[in-house]
Length: 214
Image (cartoon, rainbow, N blue to C red):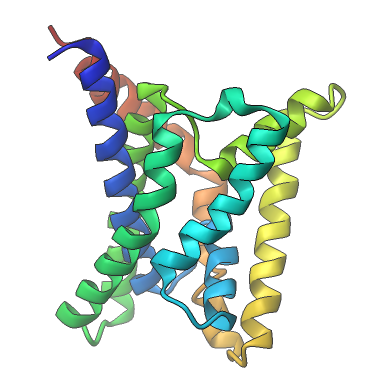
């Protein structure tokens, strides 16, 4: 297998597993990552399937990247655009069928599994280096165009906008605060502040060794 074939395989694997992790986050109902909180809010008010909604929203964000910096777009961007939403929708439906009732402990276990496999998937996805998701591209483009504003602050701002918008949309849809905390909760805090070290661990011990394997 050539290096490019291995990179494409890593991108596909990373995106598919990322979709599975989104399903786990949503089933755990203890909070999702910032972008998915926005998607959950939109899903609550727009009456179409989550997979199709994910494609439409990301297609709009893709236009932004194409206009301002198309160099951030790659094979992995397209794979992410068309796969993550449908894989997440499928995995959530399966989890609901397999686990119609979950205790709080079961939800925490599902959240932890989701976090671990999302970090594993992200390590493969980033190490393949074949493009970034359109949401990631927005913060990168903004930070490069605003020399005085570092990437981390652009990302914090974009994440905050997503969380606030997702919360507002959920409330507008008629969700109770308890249901909203299932979208913006402890899982949101963990993904925002603690995923970096775990992604780095999988980069070093899984993704890079797989890419460099003879």
